[in-house]
Image (cartoon, rainbow, N blue to C red):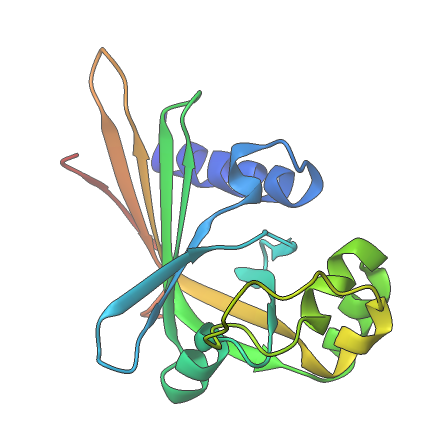
Length: 184
C-alpha cells in the first residue's frame, strides 16, 4: 500500500459517508476553538464532500456556538473513525459559514425532518427550565440554516492492524501535495 492508496481510500470513505447514513463516516466529530481558546467538539452529519476542492459540507443553526466560534476563528478540525475498519481520519483546515445560494440549495435538498431542527426556539445553547417542544414547522427554520464549508489542508490517516499500524500525513499547505509515512 502506498500513501496514494491511503488517500484514495480516505476519499472513497468520505464520499460514502455522505451517501450512506449507516456508514461510520456519516457522523464525524467537528472541533472549533471556543471563546476561551479551548477546543470544542461535537458530532455533525457529513452532508457533502468535494475531493478536488478538498471541501467538506456540514449544516448548522446560525445561532449555535460552532457558528459563533467559526466567525471568530475559522480554524477547525474533523475527526472520523470507522471501528470496523480500524481506520481514523483527521482533517484540519478552515471553514466558512455560508448563508448564500449554496445554503439555499442545501436547504431545498433537505428533508422536512431535518429542516425542523433549525426551527427550535429559543436558539441552541440557551438555558431553559425544561426541554422545549419539538418544532413542527419545517419552513420556520430557514432563517437560521447555514452551511459550513470546511476546506482541509492537512489529512492524517491511521490504520490500526495486528501486523503493524500504518500512518500517513497528506499536506497541501505549501500548494502541492506532500505525503509522508509517519510513525503511528
